[in-house]
Length: 56
Image (cartoon, rainbow, N blue to C red; front, top):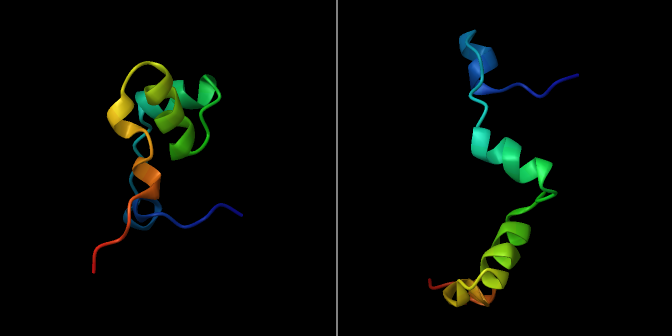
């Protein structure tokens, strides 16, 4: 059974992101995969971004 989405509730079609489809084709399944790729390609400011402390 497919999960209920807002598009399904409204009776419309869901948006399929071409960028998300390309990322999945390239084997990027989770956001951390995309972050690692960015760091490997030279975007060092993303390095360690997942370790940031939560500010309350």
